[in-house]
Length: 335
Image 1 (cartoon, rainbow, N blue to C red):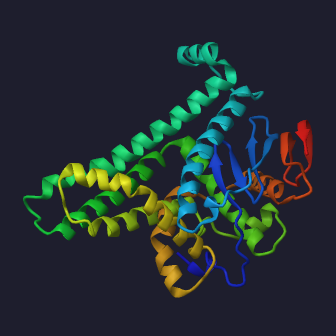
Image 2 (tube, rainbow, N blue to C red):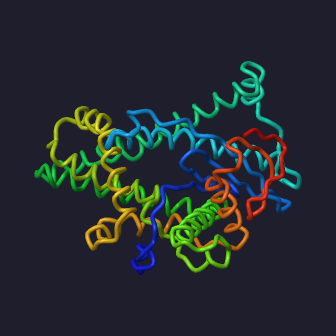
Image 3 (cartoon, rainbow, N blue to C red):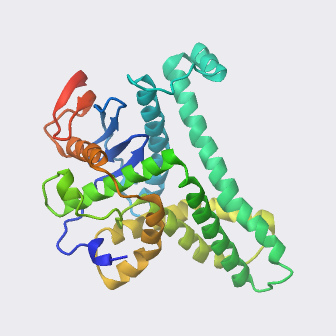
């Protein structure tokens, strides 16, 4: 891992971030988001949405990380569902199938928009339930088995924290074997290469983006690694109470951990000191699993999404098609 190619000297950090979705990328700027999806026929669908202004609470250090964490869950799931819907309705999509009985019942009961909202928030709830159950409750329950062999409280907390990290890495390794996930990881790499290119003041072209790596210090994957490391350190201060108290304390401290982790991520994205580089290494190592080298067409998608959020003179609300140069073909647009 060449840190000089990640923490690039004289680069100008930006707040623009993104997320890989099915066959596409969502970029988020100061005042808008843009999701660009490559359809089976090769054309690129784009949806631009205005962001609501931030409240005073969302600007307070440490507290803002909690809001961003929740928002990323909702918006991330919403964008994934949207990308799936675009692909299913696209010309040339070969795996289109009839809606299942649950989808039909929800549509009849709540209408198409209401059904989508039900599925969105149900997906977020299930994702939270899985994350809490598998990565928080399960590790602390499993470490109960070590109580007869390890009497030291700090040692038990250390085992729990390391087990949580190992379980997460194994999970990422397992899903990375899936073809669809590998495509998502390539789009993730395209997002990072595009942001690096922009932060270095170069013209956004596939040729320029190719010169940059797929690892970036200001990535959601690094945020998750910060969460696990901070939780390991913080939980160690709480001793080793009963299983019920351990689970309760870990759940209650999630907002605190998210707030601290977000501030560390922001800090890591702004500097290139030796300490910041050392702090970022675990998250960057994890990114080696969640990013892959993109092809030219995937870079074109990233560039189109980036240009859409950077273009302050462009529409804040738009649904249509685009090319990598930011030329929009209107289907429905309002400024």
